[in-house]
Image (cartoon, rainbow, N blue to C red):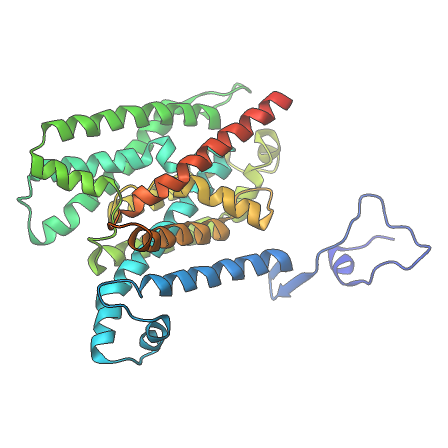
Length: 380
């Protein structure tokens, strides 16, 4: 008797005395809505909901911090349309853009890290390791140092972010072209290991370029550039937040629409090719989406290190998935940046940039990944 997937998803477990077919384990329940078919994973869904709730709680807590302390209950009251006029001004006009920017930047970095790590099959393949963040930083520093603070108005608002976005995209194209070559099977393309190695080299070159620009700048311009290089939320505003949110929305749509292709790419080159997937085309498209997300995040607040590296790995362990989960990585990334903003203004005597806090916690996590990878290599 032949059993369809619908039959397996809806029939009751076999009774005693009836053996299960070989290789058939517990079948997950299926949910069908018209042409859509989803497999229900209650544990994974519960973890995602917990992460979303933690992000909302951290988001509200972030808006309580400032010169005038506002309790969380008052913040929720303002967000639902209540509160006094002064409370609405403080929360909606002053603190809400900063908190939303932290969410957008963290989600973009987490999603970018999940895409690059999934495609390249390497937990170290994050935008800040591959040189994308350094390219964006070089573009922004060049504008800050080059204008000497002379730009005003719209040029001052959009100049450095636009240069950062351009620098990240140009760097990604350069890395991709330098990594192009003949693979182990004889086909021309880009392999994960080659892309990571080229990215590390380009990252070192770009960091030296940033250092050179800082040594040639005036003291005032160097201070402005150094503040931006630390990844600060202090200068965030709606003019930068809205384009970043729109870009992140487009990247999320592209990433979720390619979720099945991304899962297929994890199966290896030969299997993916047999399934009819155009490997190089899909890799280029998904890496492009990751580059846009990372470049936009860097353009808004500056480089925020280790979020794209640690976020997908933490989400993978929480959700227990075979690959880096997209939604989970975005949520963990957002929690990391919002939490770093809260910690920078409450745990330290001075208001630290969020990039300093994420680097302090991300450095030990990088060492953990390196030790873990070394143990795997030794055992194998």
